[in-house]
View (tube, rainbow, N blue to C red):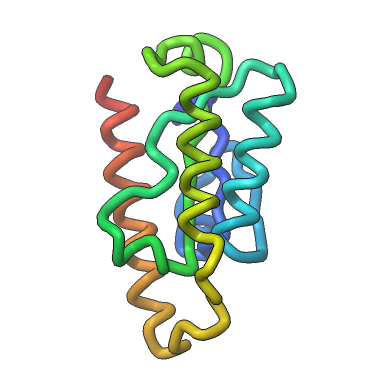
Length: 130
């Protein structure tokens, strides 16, 4: 288990799988990104370890979002500046501005949750194998 990671997610599949430091966010993907932006900007040494919009443009509409932040040595290991990381999040939020997540058919939620979960697992495995 990587102890220098913080996972932010609104996906119950991730909540049930990941047993490290985790913040459960029970709202839209925008709230996940706002929380990440808050943590990056508060000076506690967090760093974004994966792009906030993984996958393609269609996945932008995914009502589930999981982000991995690093802290301490893990956070300092990224080559992207804190300002660039925050800009990624702000641009992602701008792209999400017009999405009404309440209009997404509920019968697709399980599929979207699984896609987000699988992207998270792949990213986590990559971080573990670094």
